[in-house]
Length: 190
Length: 298
Image (cartoon, rainbow over all chains, first blue to last red; front, side, top):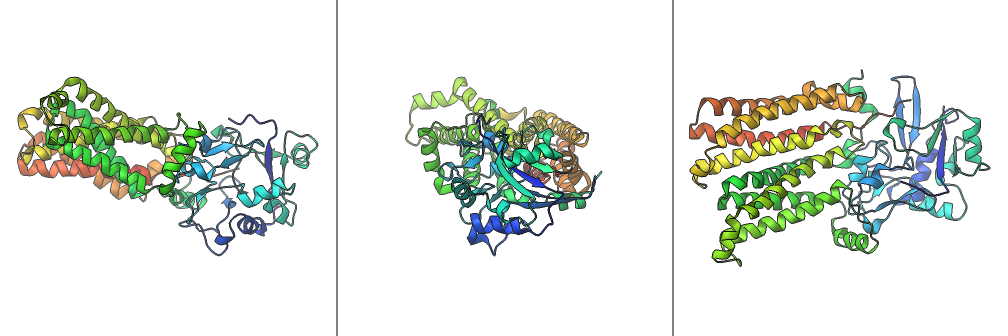
């Protein structure tokens, strides 16, 4: 379970998203440019850590879903060699040195947010290495930077002055699949 | 209620986990070897031990071949040990330890049986002893249970999150092992007087398997998780129904059960044993392929 004081999180505003796909491509370009013209094997979607979920079962909704940076992440609990871990910012990260590519974390994620890189065999997820470098340089992740509609935000939800904390306070937000008990840190404005 | 086609449109990524026939064969081989060693406590015949050793090694090779970063395995182990990052609560980790023990142990057992390196009366006495076979019996059962918990811990797939799966794997693994015992007996590879109980065991195990499958599906169909219900429906009348009804229920359980009750003809026995063994494989494959992620709904 993540115990860090800082908790970086994503916000996705479903009411502002125009479905342009800029975030999906920015994710690919920043984190795995070698996959830009390829798709995830057996998954009809560009190679990206962001995937589209459309549903009309309860009400029409289109979501762009990615790793929820869960505070009680099943992928961390099930990884045999501790390759998945929480970093000092509360993000769920993967250590390639400890990963054997068993894909157990892929089957363990209720959000279906991971995919296996066809070349390296690593289970990919948000936040990718490219975006980590951006964050370390004080910038926003690629998807947040690329969004033309301001539908995304990223930051420390434990800092009341952060933009994301303010947006969460001011909007009606939900987390996805709360019944799974994973304590996700991905907030959807509905 | 969502139909399977609509459901699949919402959650199409099961294949991204690449858990296909390789893992089905691995689960089957571990079930055969594991429950075979459990029953071997009462069998203790060389040829049976050889078969179980081969199944354990083949199963382990299958699961290792499935690793997308197989060559990183030794480095990952070392790195995790040095950083004290080994996840002792992960069934995948527990399974790696159990499988390693089973492979090394069964190879040791086979070498004693074959008189390779471990020759002499002392080793033979050990291989015949109750404590030695008791350890293998427990290890075999533990490996089979692990192969069930491996699925239950994959919380992304609600159909698998059922405590019945390890029990089902045990019963089905036992049916598969009894089939192997009967095959070897018919072909004179093991002493028939050592396995007089195989017919009665086979009948009760097949009945127990059918009841456990019924309980598993009934629980899944009553679940409040949509993906669990859709998984059960895919076995009953969906894309996996043919494999399930024909391969698992009819030819994998009912035919062997009825034939075992009606006759002990060796020709029929060979057929029912083979059907039972294949049925155990198809049971694992159909449960594996019926795993779906829960859709994200708001």
